[in-house]
Length: 257
Ligand SMILES: [Zn+2]
Image 1 (cartoon, helix red, strand yellow):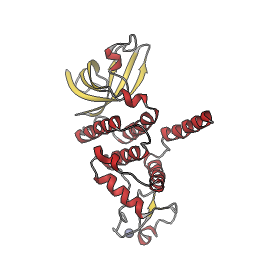
Image 2 (cartoon, protein in one colour):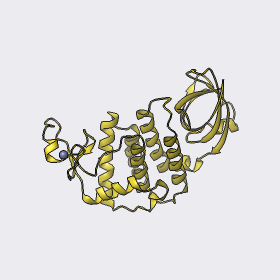
Image 3 (tube, rainbow, N blue to C red):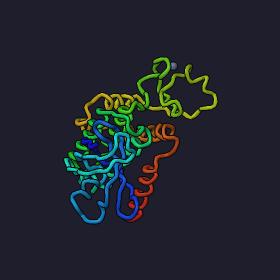
């Protein structure tokens, strides 16, 4: 059976000598894997359509329940090569991809998630050069919100009481009363009102204008730290890419000295 859909390439793995297994975020089937026959033999159009983050219209051939349908055609709609060529953009988008792949089950349709992710790629592509730390942080928060895993910072997650103590193991702000029974988990982060305000805006503003948000450096640092801890608990492991990024920054700082 031939299936047509739109997909964004999340990752590719070599398969045998010349073949590839491609993981897509598809518009109507969620995350899917498909098989590409010898795309690496030549620098073909088909080969370029399988580059990470490429948005393409794809045709897949295989039985209805086939675990690995074959890609028979892929027409590029957006190559997003600018993102691949920008080190910081690519590393940050790779983090989003890792979160997606860790949290979302394969084959769970989610049209809104596809539209959201495409919107993020367009927003990053259109953003100016220079520091995009805020934009990258916002996209991470928004992705977590889109998949229902965003930390709750507006108020205590149990009773709604005002508080500023974030409990990474619970993924939420808790007030003293609600936190009291958590005897073994004492790891908390005290956050500022400015951080809560900025966070609320990141969740509520449309993503394509979110680069107008200009948080203070302290707010960015505080929220970035909080998000790292939240993700560590969420994914039960530190994201490989955040360790990669720290390593890469260290190497770069060393090289520029
Ligand atoms: Zn409470």
